[in-house]
Length: 214
Image 1 (tube, one colour):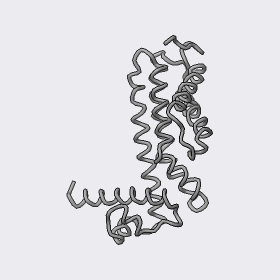
Image 2: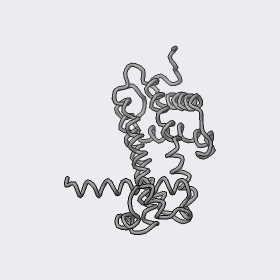
Image 3: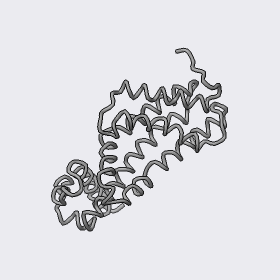
Image 4: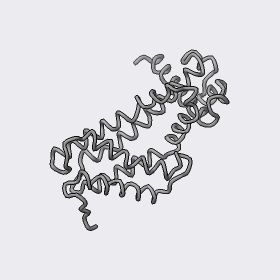
């Protein structure tokens, strides 16, 4: 890749990162392009050269933030490819990592912005959803399908299993975190992950309800 093209991509990424930081801190209405340029370390005209106006900048910043969040969540699924001798422990570890990612400051900021700006940007929810949750559920379904085919989980519908596993994790977390406005201690996240896996394995475990002695 030519140096000029690489430099242009790097500047665009810096602008999107700076934009998300400023929007998360000040909200859309109070954010100004000069603040975003300062956060990105570029001149104000450079922002307009890459992204034509503040509204376009907001949409692209939200989409980029969602994709970054997705990358972390996809990486958290890796242990399910080699679950070892204890699928329960692997599911609990994956569940805990997903919960930690869901309630980190960046993810909470993304959700707060969605809630706050939905009336101004009703399409933002579709942009974020397209860059995130569906891909995560699809990837999780693929990992669970492998476990079903190997006889380590029961069931024939990995897509439904993936949806239910995520719901068991995220639903209680949203309540405990007050929609991302309250920090949740790590011990509480572990408790939520363990409870989610317990319920999940009652439905999809090879031996329903069985919990090995540790």
